Length: 530
Ligand code: KIV
Ligand code: ZN
Image 1 (spheres, rainbow, N blue to C red):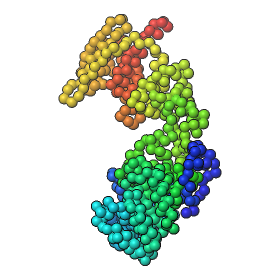
Image 2: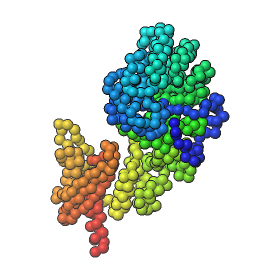
Image 3: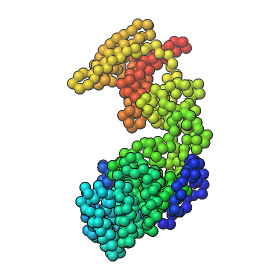
Image 4: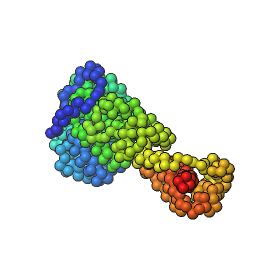
């Protein structure tokens, strides 16, 4: 397929177990080709529907990735689908473009009408499918398989044939149908684990058995219902399969198909087999993710957001010394980046290194304060973004200027809801040693809380300016509140306060208290200086 060999040094970027080679079941037979069904089985995922432009964009990305066969759709399902499949066939891709077809002549005709040169025919061979779905006898099933393959061959098409639900079929019948399909002209026999029900050892035995009777290449198509799609695919390759079917990001019916990015990385990691262009994996995964809008688990292997993210101090330290300590391979192999995540398990050396990278000069002696704030703000396993870390650091530096707090908020209750007037009650301890308790209403909970503090402090105190900003785009992200007060002590002075936190009411109140304390601190300073 004219693939470029992997760049020199790629092997050195992997650090997998030395036990793998010792445990191989005879090992794969040379090269493995990759058959992608993102546009057919992948589109069958509940929640995914692709328009023609989407499909064309994905087909181009798959071709760029080095896919050998692209199943562009199911031409016999509708005229629109046939048109899309035809357009993809005409893109001039390097990959061989094909369509799925049931073992009926009408579907072969649809493949011909779509101007394709390759068709993937299938029919179920398990008792349960023949009895409950097809309502056909084994003899009829075999005859339909042979007839459609011969019909396709007679019309000049290349054919791959699949025994749907092969892994729950009777072995003697399965072999009989596969041999008949081979004799009828199928150039490749695909063994689908349609419902994801086989275990890796059994898959290995089944493929070995079929390879021993067939002369054409054997392919596998593994679904992930029991979480074994990848293990079964590798077991099949280890026992002689030379083609793998799957989808990008593992999308597909129910729990999905085997994820081709995992197949490509693992074939190289465990057997040194070169298939897709690994360096394009992240980009293509993102393209497919964006177009399908199918959510991906952050811990998805190879392409998940967390695949190369490290948070725990011990791990970060190890990776900083040598990435192989906690990474099976370097992220750049698949075009990804490594992330050091700031969160509640972070150590101060990584946070310090991150601050340096952000260009923030943060005093070493105040790191414990910063780490305490990081842990406090990363409640509920929240990750602290770079922007949030920067804000927390500056907030600590800013507060450092006026460490005294003669006024303290001792208690606060805020009541809000629908059809109720937002009301706040606060109790403040004041610089003269007394306390003040006040209640106020407002247009919302923030307004009510700030009004109550104003009333408790000084009747003439006014809020000259109030600004709030979310530091990142989520509803649980930190927000920053900046306030300017006038007349905190009835002397017409302006005082400025700032605070951050995940709760907007608390951050607003903290900013107001910071401004009040700042006002007291600066009056004291002036008096001392005077
Ligand atoms: O899962 C399956 O059996 C299939 C076939 C049509 C190949 O998708
Ligand atoms: Zn399938």
